[in-house]
Length: 115
Image 1 (spheres, rainbow, N blue to C red):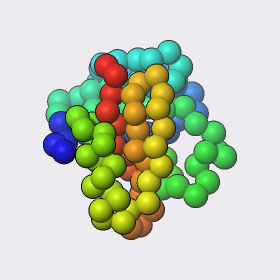
Image 2: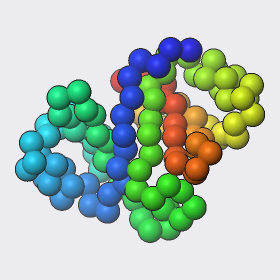
Image 3: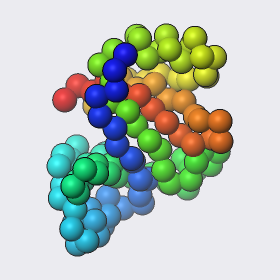
Image 4: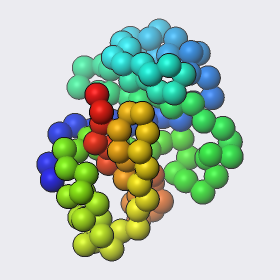
């Protein structure tokens, strides 16, 4: 498994307002998938915005999760199993996800995207 790219996802309450805010401080919209997810960039930085609710924030690392784009979903799943790191998987319009936490509870994920 090779990590090909990474991003930081910030959970937000209102995607349109958040995009406007980040654009106003100099970021540029890279990609947007309806009202589900948007990526904004600045030099050498990709920030993902994901709409959420208070109930989705309970028990996780607050408003931040860190994603790593991968090319080998099965290899990543095997690696987490070998390291005894609990994970869950899901498939969505954007790709396949492996969700897991660091030792302090920070939400992390591997994604093999469909884009």
